[in-house]
Amino acid sequence: MSEMSEGLQRDWNQHLKELLDERMKVIHDYTHTSASLQRSHDLIMKKAVSLALKRTEGEWGESPTHFTFFLMGSGARLEQAFWSDQDHGIIYEGESERHRDYFVLLGQNIVDALSQVGYEPCDGNVMASNRKWCMSLDEWKMQLTGWLKENRWESLRYTLTFFDSRVLTGEEKLLYELKGYLFSCIEEHPYLLKRFTENTGRLRKGTGLFNQLLVETKGKHQGLFDLKQIVLFPYVNGMRLLALKHQIYEPSTLERFEQLPEVHQAIKHKQKSYERLLEKRIEWTKNVQEYDRVHHLSLKDISAEDQKQLKEWVREGHRLYREIERAFKEGEWT
Image (cartoon, rainbow, N blue to C red; front, side, top):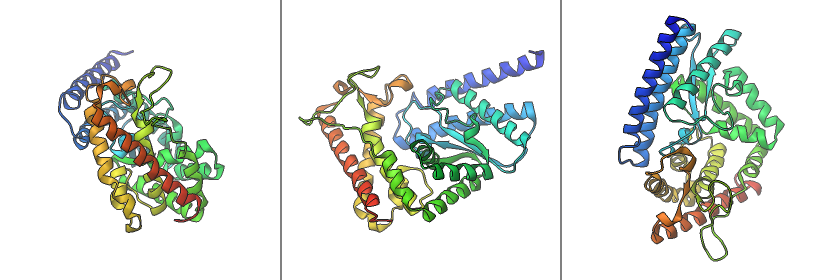
């Protein structure tokens, strides 16, 4: 490594160390609401992406074309806990080998930056460093078409993953156009809505025969309750299906509640309940020290009153999803 590159590497590491220190202060040292926590995550992630872009420009020059860097998963839905992993992608204009290589390098630098400031890399490699999630706009459209035509569990899962997306930095119109293209495909082939319900319909049971909350029986989370899979996901998955049906661009579950047409008035009334759930999750997980534990609760640390409320959310979320699933399967809303 040359003296100059060694110096750049030292600067890079120092900037990221300072950003990690800032993260620990603004995210972990404050009393947060769910909304303020999301704003703090956005602040840190935008700074990390800015550092990654500067590093890429230092190596390869300025961006060769317009692009957007977008989040997926809980980051896109504005539902991150105190610790979160990475789910993101890049869309860029134009097609050339240089464009492809430039933005994959940018994606790699973003993954590196976010990792160093406390965001775990995605286990499934759903990140902008992966060519599958870093493409030109036209390539993205071809990929979405391919996923829908394949009509397999995995390809439909990729489509649903993409749909929960929002721009963190860059040209918003690129993501907007791509979502519009997805909506047009579904409008042309409405049977896909039924297929999407089959993809997300495997709800995990949350309560037992005696109305007890069911905890993990084996593995590293043995004895803990899976809040994300059992309680949050029925709401998330159900509202995603309705957003696909009604062409709602916003990825936030709360915003999807807000934008539902009046025909779904009974479902819209559950928005306040979901808001309370997100706030309670912040309270329950504020002292968790690592990503691996942030989605699992120790029930002994939760009051009897909160456990009662948790059971109500389990029942409500499962009823909500099953109602949406039934309507799509029977063609009621298609």
